[in-house]
Length: 223
Ligand SMILES: *Cc1c(COP(=O)(O)O)cnc(C)c1O
Image (cartoon, rainbow, N blue to C red; front, top):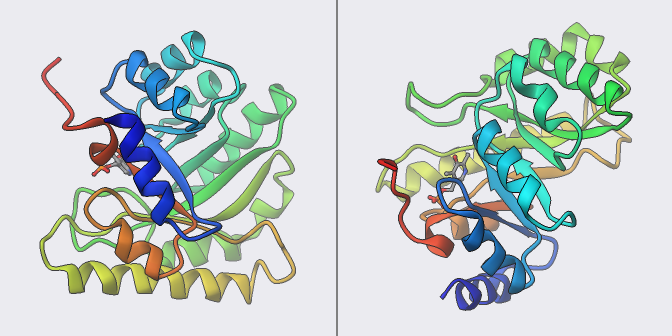
């Protein structure tokens, strides 16, 4: 099942859109099955779970951190993480830079924007993100590379609302491309779209879709 689903999704994704298989709450064996199907990008939202899987699984896996990240835990993933999608403050960005320098790396990151009409989701508002960029000190952080934006739409059946939220994030990416990041070829990624809404996200410029349930089945949160 995992193998076939991954193939079906990849066949449908336009060129340039990368699939992140979100393996949180699923065991390493499930990741291995997806790996054997050719999948290399995996997403996790807990530091401990990601480091545990990283230890036992093949080293050519690209681990994408997609959850809320506490500054005191950055050090555990800095040596190996491929991309952190959830930068939501200058404080966190600065700590990622510090730990990346210690690990002798440059870490790719995305700025997480709150686009949902929900309280519970993390991320900066457009205004908070502009403030962070205006403040300017991010430019001195030589061990992080800001590659674009990440967002999660509202959890709702109203697909028109979801679409409006994705459109707003795409427009914000364009705004930043044409201002702070003008001439920066690395700033181009848009991480948006999950199991229920990824086709909509793809229509509006997503370059990373983060898909869990469709690939691995329902998560069991009681384990
Ligand atoms: C869990 C999670 C996903 C995957 O969600 P599914 O609906 O299972 O595809 C995507 N992005 C983030 C940030 C997540 O936490």
